Length: 460
Image (cartoon, rainbow, N blue to C red; front, side, top):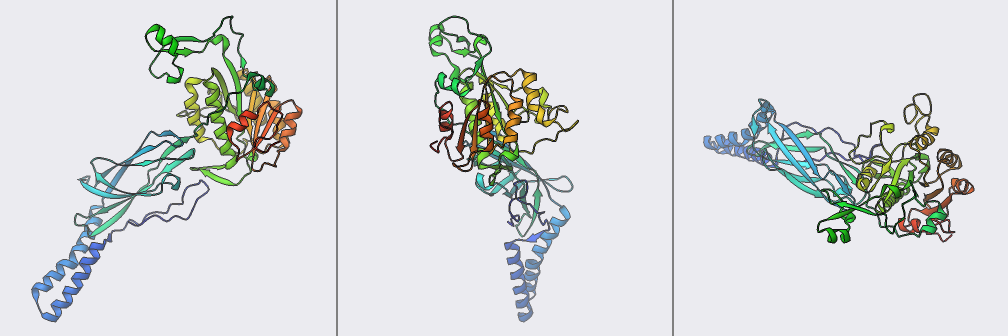
């Protein structure tokens, strides 16, 4: 099958696709028939045999008739692609199923297998050649993405041939399907409360807990509850599954801010599927996922937002919905949704300031973060995850988070010797700052919070 040209990545990170030439063409079998017909015609002329001449006319006319039939019938195909599941974690597998309906111009249904050339990104294993039974069982293939991002599956080229396989026509099935891949959170080490308090990331409680040896309450297990919340001692006592439930009197909270401003991520461009990114930003997204997973499992509500004052996206949530209507708080029940939403984040230009160019209902971009903190009452400690933060951007962050009790920052750079200008500004304001290279392990950066070392992995 003729493949689509692949000139390389476009501005969107996808391969530039060119229209498929859909004219009917002879197959290898068709050319063989034409060659045999020409040979029989020569023999019929030399020998003067009418039976050989009839054979020559048959062999030469069959491919021509097959091509003409495709032109007259004008076959059409409808390709449906399903991905199960459509949201996965990096390292997990997803099954892609292709179903084809083959119809003629007169709406007649055609049976039989058709060849499909499916366009698949290289990180998912490259293009696939499949034989799909028209109107029958779907064909399937498996992909296993290793990195987070949004990956486009398709378009596909369907090869339709006549019943004898003498002529074929390539039809363009331009439908695309997206596969969203969430980052796989690493397990972060436990940090003592004293160290967290020194770093400014000790999650504050909404109220003081009541006296008692244990503030954990339990309730009966409900369908959909994570198994990690099962309270085995209470389950054994009651004779049925019981799960831990947060005591609202002792809920802890932390505000996690991911810097999505593209000026903070000047590193070499790479692609997270179809999303432009950098190695430093990918590290920051992985660290953000790990922090959300780590803290929500420990009865902490994490308010996850970006430096533009917008809540971080959630899996399956409408990104076009106004930021004002979307909640920032992530609890244990919503941690998986929050991780899946991180599949879609990328560095972006800062929204323009102005009457209608703000990030949320006309709020100027530089005031959107402060507006979010004021509106949601975010007085909890802040953990900023950023890259090459300059001094002006650091000042904007300080103004936006001035309601917070304390602040910490993890800044990821391309080189162990590189210290962003914003690090000094944050430290001067009393923040704890950890600077790490993109080659550092997220768990090492987490362990550095609250220590005297400024740079994890660089020994200083």
